Image (cartoon, rainbow, N blue to C red):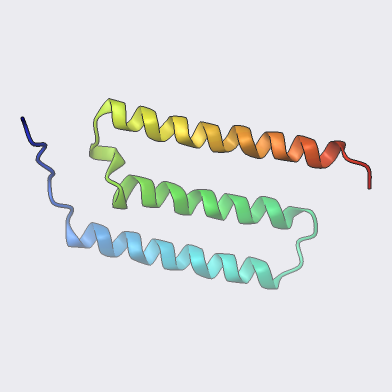
Length: 96
């Protein structure tokens, strides 16, 4: 059986990733304090998406992974998107 070898991620990359996540956390808190009306959900989802991309690329090492691993990660994201769209369709179609 062959074992996959993983290149060790540089500490500077991990520190940059951590700082980026803290900055996005600060943006999340700041966006929560401000009144954005209907845009609040969109802003929160954009910030959360940026966090998910950073975690996937750097902490889960998807940028160095095989094509099959990337395919399954993309399929998972596509499934979440489909579920979100179906949930929003159900929410919008219901009477107030």
